[in-house]
Length: 267
Image (cartoon, rainbow, N blue to C red):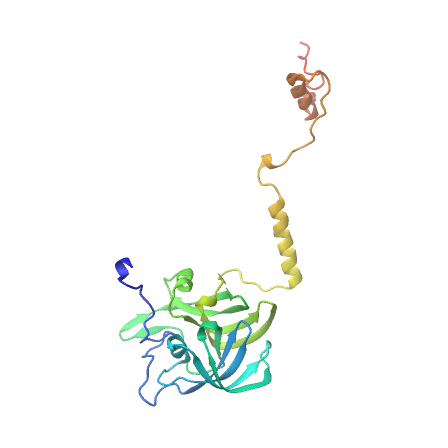
């Protein structure tokens, strides 16, 4: 891997994924305990409790957990976030298939990073993210001199912490869920927008798409279209006569060329 050695630099697992102070691990009996979370995948939305063990925050736990994540007292939700009659005392789910981990509250904090004597200033950036099934917009915090695309293209942490998050289904753009904190899985991202974000009506979007298509059909170079009509040429078929006839058709007869059939004007 060149100057990086055997592997590229990754997220420091001993730090805070949300950019706060302290280790991800707590002393015995001082972990985050039971936390309420909601998991949203391509076709599944469940809510329940997860035990963080010695982890302080949900973000620490989700980014480090290996294999199945165990939830308890789970309720399966509809696409509108309403509870169904299906409940599960215990549910095991692979985080790889989860797009969003939402929290309605809890022990997360984001903003500035203060590790020991080092203070890292961060700035807030609003992102709109498209997955195969969802449209998600929320705020992320990155270093002031950092690039948005470098932030998105990174591989760690696996789940990106976001605040003030709104989730919509691609097939139905009505607001489905809203969370003060949420984690977005990088591998689910298909596209990212950072500027000019606007949510309009379906009719407005259709009209804009038609305008863009119409603009694409307009020739951009003069040689792409035939200007005027092709003159009808009769006579001997002499190339000079064809040229003269074309001049007359283009209005050059006003100078005498077309009016005289190509003859020199009288002196």
